[in-house]
Image 1 (tube, rainbow, N blue to C red):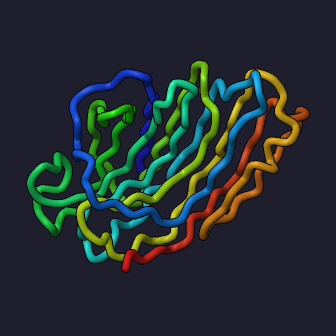
Image 2: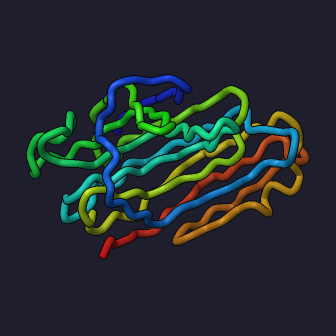
Length: 202
């Protein structure tokens, strides 16, 4: 098992996988929006990479993301794709994940790409001003992505600019579980284990 720390920055470069006209979302853990006049100033989570989707079709992305007050979406991406255009899996029998950071405005821009294996842990960290909400997603593009195994986001922490004592009420779950708690009146929210259930694109 290896670990990788990836900082999510507001500006990154070089697209890895272009956005497609076809896309579909699977299970998710979602929070937000924050209370008026506040923002998420830091978000950290660690993804334990599952096995790749089976069959290994389409462009699959597992990501944590934070919606910003300027309309941007700052993401950390674990991408499973094959064939031409993939810097991590050049043949269908390869089993690497592509790890990168991304900012989605009108176009998607991605940063440096790292190869990672199932079982590796990838920690995503984002800090700054303007975060309105945070969550995880399972996104499929280009073709049906088969079955995505159950996977886990560990040690998630959201730090607010000021206490949001009712932030737990914004939690939305779809095929997911996780206990969002605070020990300081809503300034810091944590989830020990976000479990995203197995999902099949049909």
